[in-house]
Length: 231
Image 1 (tube, rainbow, N blue to C red):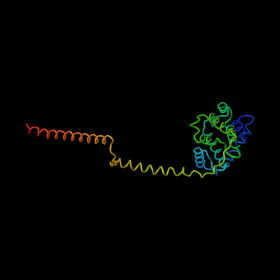
Image 2: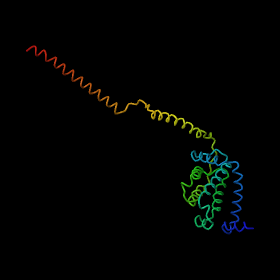
Image 3: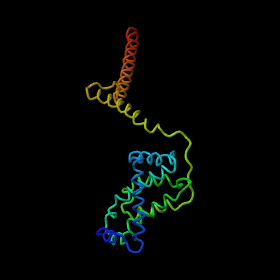
Image 4: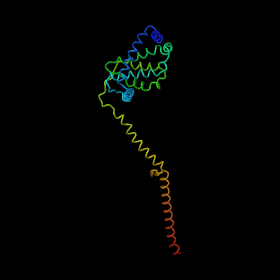
């Protein structure tokens, strides 16, 4: 008997019971959905969509992932822990009403995800750094959900290469580390310095000039000897 007044105090008047019942049913469905989808899988899937703009999962499963991440992101904002009066003052509606509205806007797509799917994934992956306030985040999500055009599932091969990139990158890093280790151990690659090359070239030119001067002086001395004998 004590729980009933407590629930009424946490909810706004008039439509509070309807919102609460819908929210409870949604949370119960989420509990079942979480058993099929892990948070790691959700994040990896959204990252692929955010980077490619395409989706490969069945829309019903992808919808579950998006709904899960949507509620997870919204719950991380401090407005979610405010009282109903504070939520109305900050958001213009209660937190539960806001979550219900956005989730309904997402799940109402039947044939496929909205064509703004890529932007939605970008927001849900990095919401707090993009929108510091829940009200701004809600407006951005609502704007991207109030569309009618949808996307079709991609038939191209799933981008498995994105998982192999770190391996190749790791090999490249190992080579760089080996090169840096040889430098640190005192064994530096024999690469001539630009200044040294220029110096050697300059020295070679000087030596050539000196030899030409020496040969010129020698020839002049040789030519002067006959003249002296003639005298």
